Image (cartoon, rainbow, N blue to C red; front, top):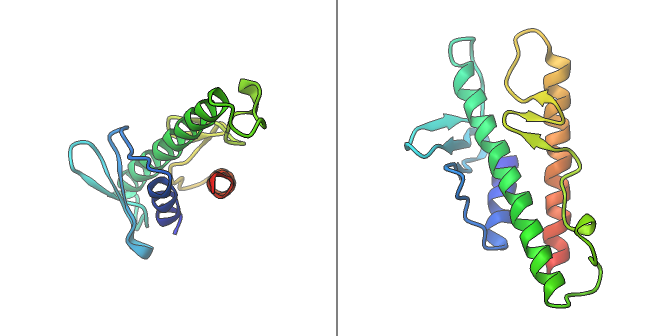
Amino acid sequence: MACLLLSTMAGSVGLRFKNGYTLKPMGSFSKVKDSKGVLYELYGPVNILSSHRYDKAMTGFLQCLKEFETFAQGVDRQNDDRGGTGQHGSSSNYFKLPYQIDGDKIDGRKIGFPFSRYERWTAALKIMLVDLKSCLAWVANQS
């Protein structure tokens, strides 16, 4: 459902991801396609042998979320340059995700599936959802 949410939000504001990844929302079986056309499953992993596919899918998803942040900042900048609503005023007021994304990490936590440290992985997924919620609030304020 997170894949569907991000894909829908991106579509509603006219964002087409250019980072080499494409979101494929398919209910409980969503996928991420890379620039080479390889599909990675956002569900699972079933076992240790297939976990790398899930890790790549989650990294791609995070990159799309990061690109959404960059897009939203650009829209805020444009609105500010045009006089907008007057709510911005400085670059510190442009959209920013509460938790920063860096590669395959969100707020310093690896998003890949661990086979031992479930607490850190669960925390990473939780804060990813907080970032998604912030994106949703930004989209709602654009209307």
